Length: 180
Image (cartoon, rainbow, N blue to C red; front, side, top):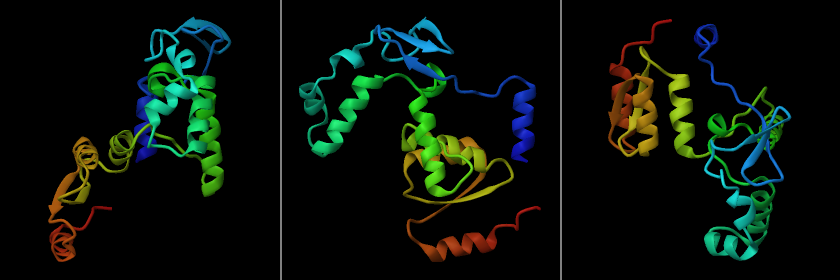
């Protein structure tokens, strides 16, 4: 079923694809397939992320959120790669492909996909896994991003009181068996 949906998107030229880019030495530019392009698509079109991050600014912005060793890694990544927009807007930095390959190898899977946030993951993964005709049983206190992901999926939603396994079991028993 997923293969059919993907095929339909490809046939309609609506499949989203990632285009690799790397930052250009001159702030405000990127390189895509070897071509030097003016970067007007990201949140970093002035190239400030590669110029403004110093140990002092990074420590001030991230104080209390990271350990000193983590701060060092983040600062190195910001100065080396900058901070841009979402991958499908600005392009796919090769460091994402490397991270995804490493994660896939670590987990022993064919591939891995890194999302920029839990919100993005829930909005992307849930509708990809369930849709119309499916049923989702959701705790009443689930995070808003899970609720939004389920809504986007258009699956039938059954909400049970938080951590009430008896109520969940009753809803599962009352739910019709899935069509095969």
